[in-house]
Structures are given as C-alpha cells and as structure tokens.
Image (cartoon, rainbow, N blue to C red; front, top):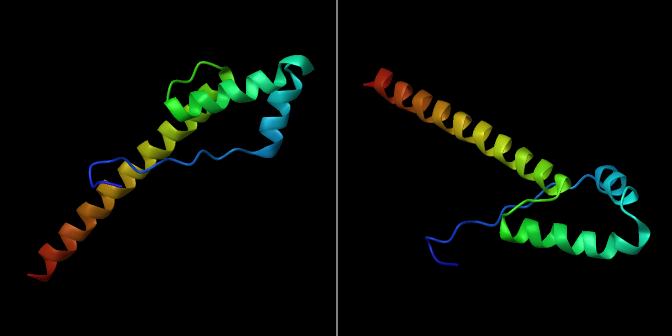
Length: 84
C-alpha cells in the first residue's frame, strides 16, 4: 500500500441489524440485495437505506475521532508548553 492510499474502513455490521433488514426483503430478492449492499459499501456510494445507515455511523465515528484527536493534540501542546 502506498503512503497516499487511504486505509480501508471496516464497517461494523450487527447480526441482528442485518437480519432485520434481510427479513424485510422478499426471499427471491435477498441474494441481489446482499450483493448490492456489498457493492455500495465497496464503492462508497450508499443508496439502500441499510447502506445509508452504515455510512452515517461511519461519518459520526470519524467526526468523533477527529475531535478526540484535536483535543489530544491541544493537550499535548499545552503539556509541552507548561514544561518549558
């Protein structure tokens, strides 16, 4: 992997959440639905409500992670400043 390539993101799928969504799909269409959801996750273009909910969770996770990282950086800078 090159230094500029983005790290892959691993979606957290709750079995109960997946089964709940899958049960709502007619039995004959379930294989196609799973394939579409997987392609949406791989391409980063959510269309299905199930995929959209996963991407919303990812966006929230990244937002919280960025805030925590910024706060950690500020605390580290303040700590260094107080030692000098």
